[in-house]
Image (tube, rainbow, N blue to C red):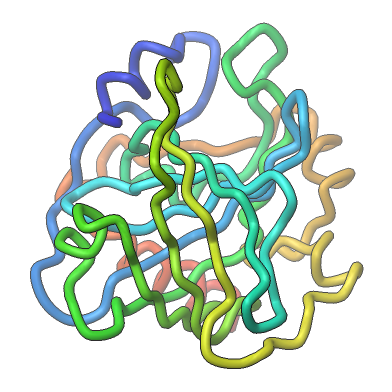
Length: 217
């Protein structure tokens, strides 16, 4: 699961997705997460954790569990660049992952009783999420891989207490722009534009602060 795999799957002359470059590693304090709702060949949610200068990523096809003990399959996919945390728009037809992408949620996370990298390596990541929509504790648990399985299957489990489910209206509203999936899809190519002047060392937290500051104006 590396940025090289991310790069190999994309033609950046055709898609406005950000290039495959590593960001600055957060060593202490609070890390950032994003969720992107992705209407590709199948609708799913991409759950991403800032870690080691990249976004560690999982595709969650059935959405997130909200009742304590409930679980959802989460398939680990290739790492994404930190800049991808600001991506909302459309991936053109004919490209990998073609379809509409909504920045569904973003915020900060902590690993309960540990650090992200060690927890990921151990195959159990107890998360405390503080997002605009997702608030509370969830745990990612790696399943034993099957022979020949190219992707790694995890379970995302609701931990500690129940959380109020996201309403249908909130589920179809971007945490970044307030747009619906239909509005994003109909934006006539006005999609993600990466800032070529920005430093590759900028962190996702800085991008989230900028988004929040803009939204408050």
